[in-house]
Amino acid sequence: MEAAAKRAGVSRQTIWRLRKADAEFDQAVCEAIEYQDEVRLEAVEDCLFDRLRTGKASGVEIVFSLCNRAPRRWQHVKNIRPDEPDGYSATPAHSGFKFGSMR
Picture: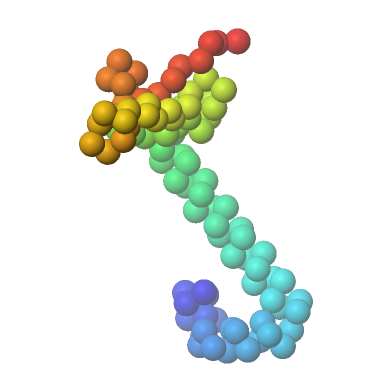
């Protein structure tokens, strides 16, 4: 909002006053914010995909991607272990993640 106000040559307070006074203007601002959020999200997704594709992704990024893109096959599972000081631990064989059957 700050950058948009600066580009328009007005203060943020002016933008807020206009939004309160004009429902159509407020709707246009909301749509612009939503569009910008989508553009930013796509940039982050593209960056993550590129890191995965080029082999530069960390283990956390790989598992995050798998759990979110294939939730039927990849899930974060905590193994409850009352004998552990923190109450749970990840099973080293699969790092606390469960691989389901492929369909």
